[in-house]
Image 1 (cartoon, rainbow, N blue to C red):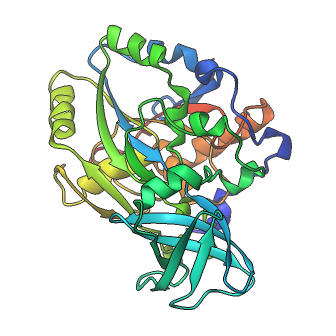
Image 2: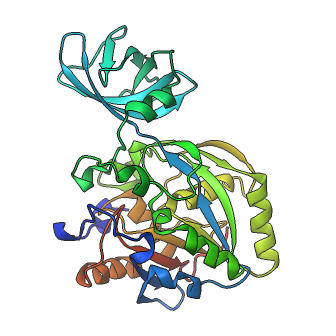
Length: 350
C-alpha cells in the first residue's frame, strides 16, 4: 500500500504539548467499525462503553529516564538516548554528536559518570553499545541523572512533572523509552470504578522503543522495516482472555503496544504465553486473532501506528474519524485525547 494513503493535515495548535490537569479529563472519540459511525464523548464515560465480564489488557512497562547529556574527552558535546538496557551495566543507545565516537572512546555523562563505547550494534548501525561505570547499575545511573525522553513532536525539554505524567499509574516493569500513551488517561479512581463495574484486567509488557517515532521513509508499506521491541505475555493473561471468551466478554487492548504484544504472541495461530522480540507491522488486510476493541490515542500522519488503527477499524472510517477529530478540535498524540475503536466488520479473528 502507498504510505501517502495514510496522510492527513494537523494544525500545530492541536498537538498536545502538556497533559491536562486530570488524567481522565481528556475527550474520547468512540469509533464503531461495525456500524461505521463515531460518537464524541469523554474519557470519564469509558465505563459506560464496557460491560461486566469485559477484559482490559494493559501494558505495564515503565518509562526510564533515558536521555543523558555529556561530552567526549575531546570536549565535544553529546546527547545519549538509551534505546535498550542490556543486563546490569550495558546499554544500546542513539548518540547525537558532531562526530560519532569510535570504539574505546570514553564519554563523560551528566558530569557524574563515564561510559565506554564498545562498538556499533550488530543489527542496527544507528545504535551504539555502551558500558556504564559499574559502580551502579545502568538503571540506577539513569534514574539518578537521566531525563524523561519526551517525543520529538512535544518540542520542549522534559520538566519535573513529566516524570509522573509521562508514566502510567500502573507502570511496574522498567525498560521503555516511550510511554504506552493510551494508558496515561487512567488514574487509580478510574481503575477502581472499572473493577467495581465487573470489568476484568490483565497485563502484558512491551518495552516501547524510540523506533516508534521513526518516520516511514519509503513510499510503499511493503518496503518498510519495523524496529524490534521486547514483549512478555504471562500465562495469567492467556487464562484471563480464555475466561473472557468463555463468558462472552470482549477483549480490549489498552494501546497499540498491548495489541501488538497479544497479536505477536498469537502469530503461530494460537495465543501462547512467553516472551520474545516483535517487529510485527500491521497494515490494512491483517487478520486479527485476539483483540475485539482498541483504546488508543491519535497518531502521527503516515505512521505505522496510524496504519495499525486503520487496519483495525477500517481505513476509510478511521481516516474520516481523524478528519472529524481535527475539525472538532481534539488534542493529538501522546498527551492528547483518546479513541475507542470497535474492530471493523469483515475483520474476523484469524
